[in-house]
Amino acid sequence: MARVGFIGLGNMGGGMAANLAKAGHDVRAFDLSADALERAKAAGCLPVESAAAAAEGAEAVITMLPAGKHVEQVYEDSVFGAADTGAILIDCSTIDVATARRVADAAQAKGLAAVDAPVSGGIAAAAGGTLTFMVGGDAAAFERAEVFLSAMGKAVIHAGGNGAGQASKICNNMLLGATMVATCEALLLAQKLGLDPQTFYDIASVSSGACWSLNTYAPLPGMGPQTPADNGYQGGFAAGLMLKDLKLAMEAAESTHSETPMGARAAELYTKFADAGNAGVDFSGIIKMLGAGKV
Ligand code: NAD
Image 1 (cartoon, protein in one colour):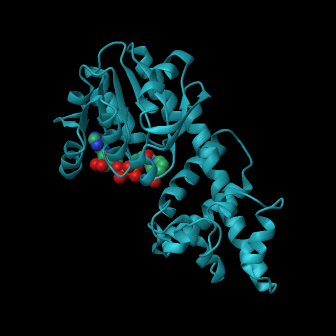
Image 2: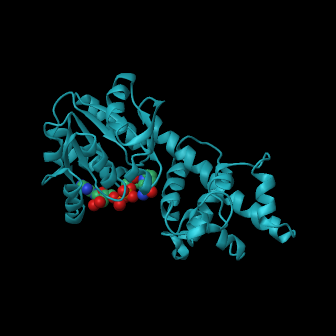
Image 3: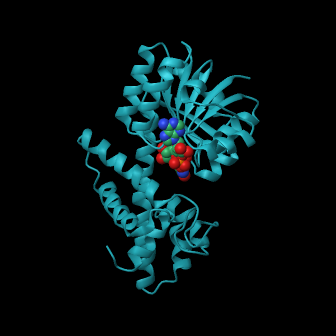
């Protein structure tokens, strides 16, 4: 088993580092938060005093940080100077494609391999080791990263060259944001037209309107499998995180001169929802704002 440096032990990284330790890896863990370090210790990781100490002597250095600026700063200030030549850097954070490509180029210029490997699945999947990883990097780097990622997830998919993992993630989540809004408005219109929402679900979920937001993650309680709607819209995927991903998608659309009218509208609506104090509410809770006519 290998020595792994793990930097960023928050809601997601804490569970991921624990799964690497459970798989028998020697995990040197670092976070700015003392509480996070304590939790990592209890989960079988060895807490270290800096990001550089986590990277030193590691075969793989994994980061799970809030945004691109954190990844770039940790790489530039700590990892590049400390990691052994030939180590692989695996960034699992959700960040913008341009930064993902820039840090991978900088890593490769220093003799380090690098992949972007953002995840689908939330805190429960991180804890349970059932994440999906979408990986950007060359074939050799993907093969090396796969060994570590498969200890933390149920699926590891090679998306293409550096940045392709982040591109997959933001396009997927733009699609998810738009289909969730569309699912909510269809359910609300069906109700206003006098249809029982459950009857509409029974029809649309086996018709051409079927989609993950309706079939698997229905935004009304009592419909389909258990969802955050059955739990007062708590847990699940926070609207604030959906908004972060939609903003990344909008930046990417602007930089590539792409038309994304549905993504743009979803970004507007999630901005409004989050600004009204709902950033911590599950993203399907936007049905309450749409139902109240506050758009
Ligand atoms: P989080 O805020 O819970 O964790 C981030 C951690 O990074 C914190 O513990 C923080 O102390 C640490 N950190 C920040 N700067 C640091 C530095 N310079 N050095 C060391 N540690 C530092 O966030 P999270 O929910 O774990 O999300 C992490 C990433 O995963 C984000 O990019 C997010 O978009 C993505 N993501 C989250 C979810 C989710 O459901 N939470 C799902 C998919 C993807």
